Amino acid sequence: MVDNTEVGKPVILAVSRQVSWLQVLARKGVRGSAERLYFGEQLPNHTLMQVMNSQKVSVIIPAFNAADTLAETVASVLKGTHKNLEILIVDDCSTDATDKVAAKLVEQYSRIQYFRNPQNYGVSKSRNLMIDRATGEYVAFIDSDDTWEPNKLEVCLKMLADNPEVKAVAHALRYLDKHGKKLSYIPTYPTTKAEMQAIKETGESPWVFPSSVVVDRSILLKEGGFAEDWQVGEDTELFTKLAQKYGLLAATEPLGNYRIRGKSLTDKHWLKKRIASDCVKENQLRRLRGEKELSLHEYEQLCFNNLPLLQRLNKFREVLALHYMRKLGQSWLNREVLPTIVYGVATTVLNPQATVDKWKWMKAHEKLSHQTAEGISHAPQLNPQRSSEIGGLS
Image (cartoon, rainbow, N blue to C red; front, top):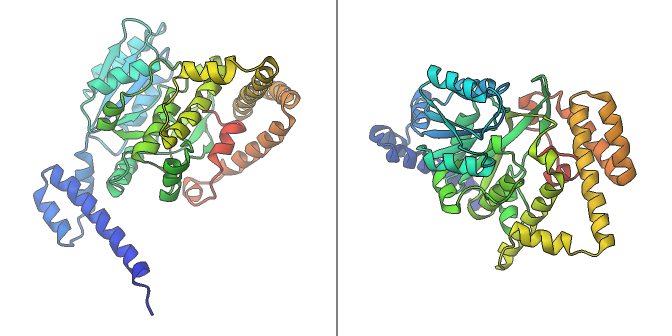
């Protein structure tokens, strides 16, 4: 006896994908192609590419003292296979030559717009201002020192078309060292529908970086964008909320590159970053229980500042160990021997078990760094929750 349910699954999947493309075609007014797709004809590749390129993407680049890397970042976007885009550079009162670099780019390329904040607003408000100005159907973020692979937007838009119930997509990355060399693989999560559902049901957090995310602009406007009162962790807060409420799916292919820098906001405000991450996890669970969410200030007072002295000191020790592990990972990836030893010793003193976990993480990334992008897409995934605990550079 044949199980019709199992036989029907591929057909249902094919039909749903056909319908999703039909909706895109109809929305864009490509009637002839829509009719051909509906009646079962295979559209030529150039027609599908034409349809995908009809979807405008607004690429938002917040910049602060990014004169050394901004041009490289913009070039990686412009070299992409998806051409229907606008690039919005927002300069948060840089004190270097960022304005001159941006002005030159605007002169060369009509798709680039440059804005300079009248005062230092921070990355959250800077991104939100550009979300309001954006005219694309989708918004993609990239930091001013990161880069994309040429097929990044093409793959992301296809993921959105193939999964109409998902409103945000992301992908894996590779680390870039301080010289711009591509290093080891950064895993991502969720990469399957089952993992995506787990986030919605159990309160898990996604493992994505801002430079990997593409999201429906209407959803960003509905949710109010990034939390402007969060100094760090605002990206984790927003993307976790989007994943839980609207669905977020990530590709295992490394479609971008994350530069390792030692003077990031996370480095500067490492304690606030950890508190913010813990606040996100707490609010995930509160949403599931139908309870009122805590503001970041409320969570900090309740779960850190008001702890008994010994508990607070122990919490501080744990967080400091995580910070040193992060610095250890940066130094190791940049092949800086002395800092690697110093941070390794400091981590061992503060948290011996964490040092063992960190060593495992480093060895796993060393192995992944020698794999091709094609091989990685089929490789077993590192546990993103665990990698964030033992030294992920988020």
